[in-house]
Every structure is written in structure tokens, then in C-alpha cells.
Amino acid sequence: MKHSLVTIANLTKEKIEYLVEMAQEFEKYPNRKILEGKVLATLFFEPSTRTRLSFETAANRLGARVIGFTDPKVTSSTKGETLKDTIIMVGGYADIIVMRHYLEGAALYASEVAPVPVVNAGDGANQHPTQTMLDLYSIYKTQGTLENLNIHLVGDLKYGRTVHSLLMAMRHFNPTFHFIAPKELAMPEEYKQYCREHGIKFVEHEDFNEDIISQADILYMTRVQRERFTDLMEYERVKDVYVLKAAMLEKAKENMRILHPLPRVNEIAYDVDEDPHAYYFQQAKNGLYAREAIICDALGLTIEDVRNDKTIIL
Ligand code: CP
Image 1: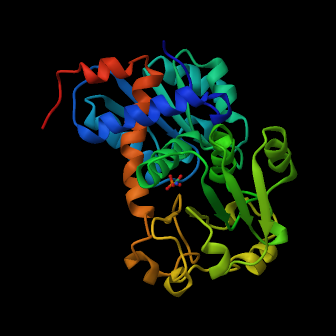
Image 2 (image 1 turned 30 degrees about the vertical axis):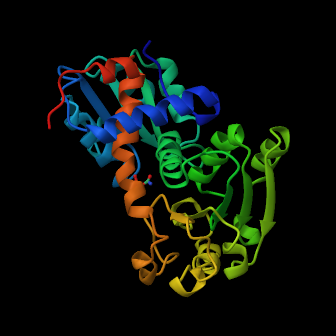
């Protein structure tokens, strides 16, 4: 059945595991014609490199065609066209809409008015569910499980939508979270309350050092989200609060992996790139397979359809 993906909070444990399994199928054979004849629209009201390009790559590698825009300034929204009208109209052209918007709740609204499935590619500081699916796929690939992991979230936990979505998704897998942030960027109370309500263990820290890193299975670094600050002086005060350097990894567990949704600014020094714990570029690549799975699932294709698919291009 066709359906939208607006929030990770609606996905069951079984559905998450199913999408991880489907992503594995696509990693084995990413090039197919299973979506031949379909059109995917990418509507990006905010900048993006990875999310848009990996969705477009996914569509292209599966035989679909892509329409869309990367800058709302070149669309009729500058003439006053509403989001509702834009979505209804694009829904008449495309089979599926992938949308990033600066307003929290925009994806939910779009999914309610669209005649086709809508995939949320990020709505303000709220949710980024497809990033979460690639994060989960990356965690599964590197740890061999999603269960019982120590996950350290570092940096901008206030505005970083990827960490909000990740903690919601992990509620099924008995994690222990470590929230590492300065007071100004601490995990918002609503998400801590979510943890309490769902029995998710968490510890808060302001220090970021070797001893704290030594406990991590996943060290999830984040960028301080400059674009969400109303007071740029405050941004200047906190922007370089934590910088991960290779020397800080000496006590890290051998199988610990460093994730980052990217783009990075200063929060991971370049000397970390050569460290075996670094995984963020592979993580971004995993986005292709995760998004191939998400597009197919939203369009109503099942894992059996993918396994039985005879259109693989080697
Ligand atoms: N991780 C992520 O959302 O990157 P982009 O903003 O480049 O899409």
C-alpha cells in the first residue's frame, strides 16, 4: 500500500527492521529498473547536498525520473502560491514527493493535502526520518545489532532534528543515550520527557572527553545549526564548543563508530578522517540504499517485490 513517511515516531520495530532488511537488498544490487515509468519530485525549500542528491540518485538508479527544485526562489511561491496549492499541483505530475521545508509540521500538512505519498526530508528542527533510517542502517551494519547500545549524541541537541528522530526510533531497542551538550544546546525537555515515557535511559553531560568517549558504541557528532539561531551572538559563543580530535579516541572501543549526518563545520577535526572509527562518509553512502528502500516502500513495493525483481543491472 502507498503511504507517506512523515515521522519516525509512527514506525514500529518490525517496520524499522523491515526497512533495514530492504536497504540490505538494495546495497547488494543498487541498480535496477524496478521504478521505470515513475516520477519522483524533490521539493527543497531549504538547502541540502546529501538528502536531495541521494534521493535523486536512488530514483535514477531504480529507473525513475526526477523533477523538482532546489531553491524556492525560482518557484511561484515567490508570487504567493501556497504550500497546499504547490503540493496538489506537483502531486498531479509526480508519483511521490520528497520535501524539505523550514517549517516544523510542513511535511505532515503536505501529506494531508497531497494525492501521492510525501516523504519528509526534514521539517525545521522537528524530524528527519529518512536520515534516521540511514543512521539505523549504519548502526546495524557496524554493530551487527540495534539492541542494547550506548549511543552518545554530541553537540547541538536543541536544534538538531536528526538526533530527535534517532532517539525516537531507538525506543524499540533498549539503548542508553548520553546527551553531551552545553546548556544552551541541551536536549529539549519534550524529548527527555519522551525518553522517560518510553523507558529510554539517558545521562546528560557538559564535558566531552576521552573517558566519556570510551563508553560509546556509537559517537554521533552534530553541527551547531547556525540557521536556527535567532541571536547570532549566541551562535558565536557555542559554535566550536566541542571539537573531536583523533587523540581523543585512544580509549575508544575497537568497534565504536563515529557518525555525523553531515555537513560538518568544525566539530570533527580532519585527522579523525583517517581513524578506523570514522564512519560518516560511509554513513552518507548508506543513505542511497536506505532511500531506495524508503521510496519503494512508500510506493507500495514490498521486499518480496525487490527480491523477485528481474530488472537488476550488474
Ligand atoms: N544530513 C543531511 O540532511 O545533509 P544535507 O543537509 O546535505 O541534505
